[in-house]
Length: 112
Image (cartoon, rainbow, N blue to C red; front, side, top):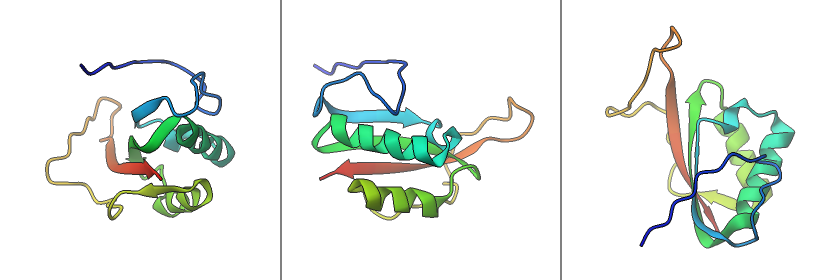
């Protein structure tokens, strides 16, 4: 049985026990944080993930810099699963509800 939890919380201070989650989804949020808050958020993700847990994340382009993401991964001990691909995939879903198309890239980030 799969249990999903949806929550609204401060990403820099998650209200969960350490090692609680196998998988976390964070969709098009992190690129809107300042660098310090983003770093604290990734540290919190690492804290609340179980060993070998996954963070499934999407990042809006061009707001998220891939070099910053890779630096944060190195600092937090998290790793990007496979090669980070920032090009838009052929099957990308996008929206122009804000007047200009919103596109994103995705990453699977692992702990351990």
